[in-house]
Amino acid sequence: MAHQYAKIAFTESVRQVQKEQNSRAGYAGMDSGEDYNFLLSQGESDFIEDRDSFYMASVSETDWPYVQHRGGPTGFLKVIDQQTIGFADYKGNRQYISTGNFRKNDRVSIILMDYANRRRLKIIGNISQVDEDDWETLASLEDDHYRARVERGFVIKIVAFDWNCPQHITPRYSEAEISTLIEPLQQQLKQLKQQLKQLKQQATPAKQEKVEVLDNAALGKGELGNGELPLVISGIRQLTPNIRAYELRTVNGEPLPSITAGSHIEVPIELANGQRVWRSYSISSNPSRTDCYEIAVKREEKSNGGSHAVHQQYQLGLIVHCKAPKNYFPLLNDSGDAVSKNNNQHVVLIAGGIGITPIKSMALALLKQQQSFELHYAGRIQGEMAYTDRLTRQLGDKLHLYPSQAGTKLSLKKLLSQQIAQQNAQTHFYFCGPASMLNELRQHALELNITSDRIHYELFSTEPTQSASACQLTLTQSNVKIEVASDQTLLDAVLDAGIDVPYSCKSGECKSCVVKVSPDADIEHLDNCLSDQERTSGKMCLCVSRPQSQTLTIAL
Image (cartoon, helix red, strand yellow):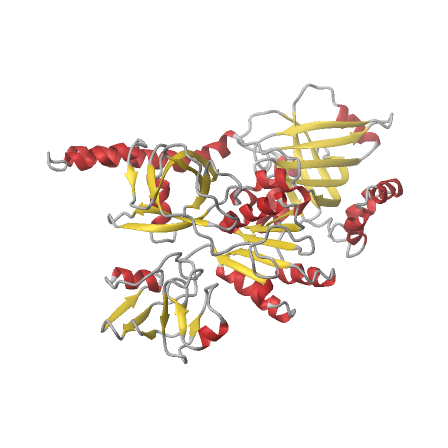
């Protein structure tokens, strides 16, 4: 895609420096391919029209470059067609340096910045001033609601463009972006205050004590849960509009139980109906830390209320009695033991969305061990991908980001094929993300003859996949039938029916909730703990797996 850009920007002297600095091989692929990157796709068009400023370089008759800032309302830089952009030039300090330079040299280079999402787009082209009599073009470049005086209009014919890497872009946020980030917090605070007010107004003397407990919890003074590990919420950070990080420390200041990368912790929450339940979250902080654990929770709109409850209830000072951390997703060496350091083993970490939480801790552990690894992190929008700023600083070129709406999509097949081409026979792959992405990874690994013992994974959600449909369970030992909704796991349906069944991780990692079904039952196995032989014999995990039919009989 960047062939035309490389053709212009990579002069012989530039290529020589790239060779000297050992970066030439990484850019060699830009020397071939179609010269089509002067045509804007929808992704580039959307990016351009979302900007409210850009930096523009011209060249004077003295051969000196001149860089100037251009600003206006969002979208003042217009996309006219796939090869043409234009803007209204508003009255400034009246030096007219850029305007004068363009009369002698029409070459222009501009950089558009998205500081919040750490993205930038470079465009080079030929610029021309719109004729004063061309009222139609001038009118199309104006913004009706922007009162600044328009002195002239410019049109740029794009010759080439290229997306830049996000390294060294410090995130900055506009007033509107900050308002968007804190709006959920303000709304929740408003709702919480209203609820407490209503409870106090409606409370009888007998209920007054319960109201005071709720009030204290809202102020960060309450306690929740009955686990063996009491922890206090000592810090809260809004990582993205929908993801919050919670810092957990011991109540008495003592060191926390030691953990390994990939560990999770079960925390207590209270659902809207008053039910007290456990939810499992990966510990995303550096596993070598003993002063605090950090978990990151994404508020899911389509869930059973667990993530909403965490965002509403977990306040500074709240004491949560958790269960001791466990690890069903450890880093392993070739012998299957926990990895300490193996210089012959290369590790590829893959994260999709909020699945970054255990992968982040793995990356930090591998970095400390000086282990060979790389991290590939995919999401929809970079501004919605947690920890990208920290990981960029910590991992450098080991980190590869794939925000799909920016036109960068992770190809799992290409990633696996590259490891084979590089003859990395010792490579192990660790994945955490949605089920659809996991299915794709496993399919490509099978096609490329990558053995299953080199693929390690954990699903970030215990919610049913979008393809799940309602079904009916028949429990032979309990002599009951249970209707399971499409947005409900089999385990939750069984528990809601009052059937006592053992469980622990609720993510298909520990075998605690394994049950026996008919060997010929058509099951979509989504666990990461059963062997092929166990699945064939009729075993399944209630927490994540699903029947492909509308009915299922279980020996329970």
